[in-house]
Image (cartoon, rainbow, N blue to C red; front, side):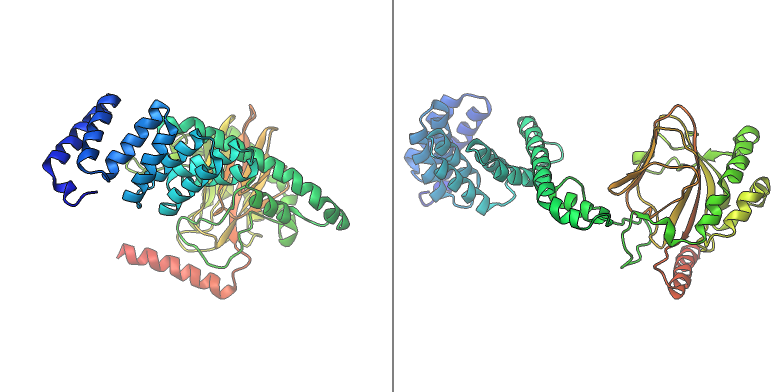
Length: 424
């Protein structure tokens, strides 16, 4: 740009008028005004860029390329310019030049969404579908949450290409892995399968996300094995007796079941809007916030006695919690996470119609009456009752077995200390 061009009032006025004409859709008038700017300042970057774009609009790709390459020299830090250069090269049928220009744009700004999208589309257009899928995956990562209208169809196409690549890559790897897998017969390979699916993009990484207390270095295990809890068998053996006591409650004390989700009016509800204060997800507490509810335990003596055999987590004013949980037909408990990974949650399925499932992280299981599920509720989980009947389970919390006795004691003191601080 000529020295002083930015301060030249005549140029400034022409730029203003040209910009107005562009906004009004009067492209030929805008081009005439930009030409006047360039006559006064031959290296004016805006004039070169917009005149190059106008040449593209008119179908003169060669003329556009010449102007846009000059614009790139005049304004080397603007990624929009090499993006337009790439468009000119594409119109000229020069795939190599197009890719080089897109890479120049991305070297200026690696997160320049239009250039990254154009690069993925370039790879797809020249038949490099696998390379396109990798770049489309990056496009989806940086795409704005509410894309403009022009980007919506390309983004949907990007998702389709990425999903197709995940499937074909998974099938390719299954073939490669088959011989090695067969050598190990019945070895437990669920962890490896999840690893493979995370690598290919078929599943997402699932981590602990406690809403209150995160105890470091505890393993993120979605479902624990029942065999690792020797005391559990005696509770599972009592399933029929526990269910019988629940059925009496449902028949005689249904009013005592309260909404499990009960947020105050001034709390943000987010995913809980539908279930807040709703009987669709109800609970009958035997222990709540660390307190035994004697009247409720008296109504369910066998259940209360059985729970006494479990190593329930004990934190004054906070734990244990033990309750019957009912879920109405066609009701979803949305994805959420629990308060702390220092505990695990135990489900004893009691009434489980067909069509019910429970997901923790990447693993989905069905409840089976009398077979406990032990899981880390700080990993995202959700539940669904797809049947036309009530689903009911017994829920209680236990200490995470990876905590030492000293760590448990200190966790108790930590939590009660925080409560004491804010109460004073």
